[in-house]
Every structure is written in structure tokens, then in C-alpha cells.
Length: 623
Image (tube, rainbow, N blue to C red; front, top):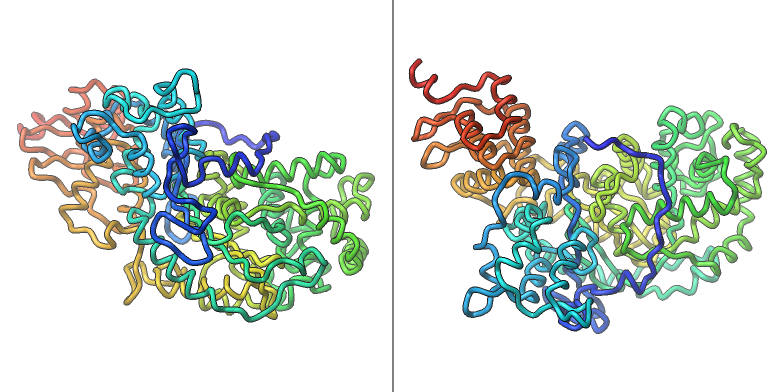
């Protein structure tokens, strides 16, 4: 397995123009696929007034599975790489079949031979993917473009020969096949996003509360702005409303600060300076418990944690480091910026901030290791700069999805922070993420969340998705009015409250289930297909649902037979160690998985099966 690297390196920043390129539209001259004009309110799955609705447009060279079945929150395994730690590209090149040509037939011309590239891209978009901007698809898109106009490297061919097209997909074969087969974490993407769109519109008329008045820059924001973005741990994307409008991170920086500090130091070290308790008061309360901030998500906690991040570096290097970490959280093509006017305005209105800073220093709440580099003025100004970093709901949803995936960015596969750090952060978000409304939010919604005074609210469904709702009108607890209302409707409709029963509650649906119900025979076929192709997304989902992994097909072939034939070593390990399947099932031809391993000369699988007590069919039948 690849070593878990945490010597963080700087990432190149990407402009908003780059982030917008190809978003939801495509023509053959510039690589954009015409799927609606997002500036005039059209969207893939219908038309909503006063809002845009985007359902895909990205790239694939990385992956969507992780081996950390032991890093599980709420009982659902994370998936951003394959169980071996490999990307989808690496797994695609293992022994196994080409992409099923039947999956590509819907994208052919009338003659059924040549592939229409625009149809293929739209097919991915309908599954929530954005192949033109998602970095995982870069290799595939570059190969397709190589078949286009040689005088214009950015152009795509209108049609391609089937064999040539399959070669272009080779590096992403497993992931693309999973997407087209409906085997991503949310298989019925259109049904899911249609419901999200309805809930979004139901909250539009909520106009209580007012915009935050902390600074003139925050006070002049249009209160009618309203947006939502969703990103799953498989990188499925959905955006609606004013999702391109930027807002400052403000309180959301505390989530990133805390996870970074726990990753770079340790949980025990960080909690020498901050507590783990909800305060029961507003987020900016001047209060300590045992001479420590109550928790890392309060203003006092955020200031204390900021002093722990790279204290030996100079001011500019510390800011650049944190800025680049935000970019890592949201993916290389998503927008992250800096609002200089807000930064200056926050400094002009920082009397309370400095009062809290002096109080924390008096109680020795700041990092004690590098006193010479940690003057109070620098700490305060650095914190103000952190809060002035800006983003939009598109990017913030990816940040939330990175938390949902245990610290692995779903778009790049980069391991940004440790899973343990994410677990601790989600625990804090559960009990104190929405200020003094946190207890009621946990009771009614039951999901980790963090709000900010800009009107943004990020919500994390571990191992499933992250989302961001943005609406500047705040309630008395300084949470987005529309954001809170949407979350209540969301968990009323879907089985995502942490304490919902494992099977579907009455009148609720689980969008992780294909068609929300599957027959036993359908599950068996999908299970066999997933085992042969190394699709751990489906296998983990079925493990959680209690599916019988030893269920055979008509010929007596089991998932273990198929995994062996496909050369899927990690699937074989998964079936034996996690699912506890019989290692000696016999098919109608009296072959066991060990017979298949010898037939296809998979030496590692042979060794594994023999260690687990597997036998050939002839030995079993003779006994």
C-alpha cells in the first residue's frame, strides 16, 4: 500500500475562470457539452425559477474506493480509492475485462458502430459526473481530444470508432463502467436530485432573519441569494441557485484548522489547548472551561487552534500553507479566493476579537512552543486573513465531501487529513457546529454540520456525501434560516438521520439503493458483475445491507468464482475476510475458485486461497 504521506506540499491555485470551464456545457469546438445555459437558469433535470441546476461535467483518472473499512462512521465504509489503496486507473489495468460494450450502445450513431462523444459525456453528466472539469477524467478526455482536429488540440471529435473509444476509456474503465451501470453511491441520481430540487424550492419563501451586520461588506450582501451544492464521495455533483456567487469562509475555517492541527500534531496535543464540550452559548462568547476554550468550533477555540498551525513559519508562509490546504480540500479545479476588502473591514471591527485574544493569552491558551513567532498581533491578523478566504457552494460541497470520505478529496484522491482527525471533527460538528442551536439541530436533523455568519451551512453525511446551502439571512443563533429549514426537510425525506433505523423508515427513502428496491436476483447479478470488475463501491454497499455474498447464479457460480476469474485479488480478500464466504463452492462443472485461479494463472490468488484452505473441485468431489 502506498505510504500515507503528510509532508504537505503547496498546490497551484486555480482561478475561477478555470473552475468555470466546461461546467455543465459542451460543444465540439471547445470541449464543452451543451447541457443547459447555467447563467440563465436552465438545468439538466428541469427548470427552476431564479436558480441554476447543474448535474455534472468532470474528469476521471483517480478513484472512488478506500480500504479503510475500519475507519467507518455511522456504519458506512468510505470509498475514494480501491481497497488496495490504488486509484481506479491502476485497478483498471489489472487482469479483467474491457468495458462492457453493451453499456456504450446507447451512445452510438444509428448504425450502432461509432460512438457519439457528446452522447457519452451527457451520459456521465446524467449520473452526476462532470467529465470536462473533474481531474479524474483528464487522461480520458485528453485521449479523446487526440482524435479530434489536429489543428485545434482542445477540440473533440464528434464520433469515434468503438475500439478506439474503448482504448481511450481504458485507464478509467472500472469507474466509468460503475457510473454507467448505476453503481455509484447514489445510483438513481436524477431521482435524487429531483427531490433535492423540490425541497430547495420549498425553502425559497423563508425570508425571516437578517443579513449579518458585523462589517459593511457582510451587511451589503443581497439577502435573496440562495444556492445549494452537493458532492458525493464518488464525486457526483449537483448545484442549483446562485452557486457561483462567492462568500467568505469565516467560521468554516475552524473546521479546517481543527482537522489540520489534529493531523499535524495529535488529538491529545491539540486538546491540551481546547476542550471537547459544547458551550451552550453563542459562537463568539467570551467564556472558558478549565482555562481552555470549550471546543474548537467556537471563536475562542478557532483562535487557539490557529496558533498551533505551522507556528515556526513566517506570517506569509503560514497563510499560504493554509490557503493551499483549503484548495486541497476542495479539489484542484474548484474556486478558492481571498476577499481583501473584507479582511480590512474585519480588522477595522476587531475590538471584540482582540479582547478575546488578550483573554486567551492571559489564560495561556495559545501555543507555548514558539513564543517569539507568536505575538498576539500576528495571531489575530492571521486569523482574520483565514476568515477572509472565500469560496462558493460548489467548492464548499467538495470540502464537506472530503470530510464525508474521511479526509480524502473525492475529486483528486488526495489524502488531505487523517481519518481520525475527521472523525473527531465530525463529533465536534455534531454537538456544537451550529452555535447554541446545536442540540435542537442534532435532535431534528441528526447530521454533523457547521454554519458561518456569511449564511453558509455545510452538512456531512459520512461515507455518502457533503453539501453546502447558502442563504445570507440568519436566525437569532446566527445560522442560515433557509439552510436550517432545508436540512429538516432533507432528513424528513431521506433515511440520513444518524438514528434512523438501518432499514428504511416509513415514508422515507434511501437513495443509496438502486431504484430504492432490488430483487434478490437483481442483487445477485450486480454482485457477480461487481466482483468480476473490482467494483468495491457496490460490494461495500451490499455488505452493509446484509446481502448473502455466497448466493450462486444458475450455474452455481458465486462472487468468489467471478472475482478469481477477474484477477481481483483485493475483492477475493474482501469476500473471504470481511464477508466470510465459503472458499470451496462448487459450480455445475465441479470447479472451485481455486480451479479458476489455476486456469487463469493468478499466482497471488492461488497462494491466498491455499492459505485459506481452498481445494480443487476434484479433491472435494472425491471426498
